[in-house]
Amino acid sequence: MNQDNLYQKVYIEEICPQCGNKVEEIDKDTSTERDMRLYACSVCEWSDYIDVGIPLWKAYSEFKKLNNK
Ligand SMILES: [Zn+2]
Image (cartoon, helix red, strand yellow):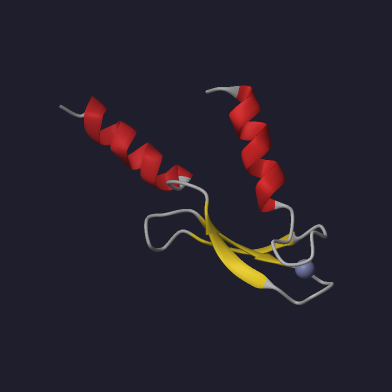
C-alpha cells in the first residue's frame, strides 16, 4: 500500500468538513460488512459515519475461505 495515500486518508477523516476542527472517532460499526467509523466534531456538533473499507474480520474470513480449498 502506498503510504502517502494512507496518510492523506487519515488526515481527511480527522478534519471536520464543516468547521475544519479536529474530529474524534466515537463509534465503530462493522455489522454491515463495511468498517464504518462514527466521527464527531465537538465544536459544531457535526457527526457522520465514514466508510473506511472492509473490516478486519471480513478480510480474515475471506482469507480463510481462500486457504480452505
Ligand atoms: Zn465541526
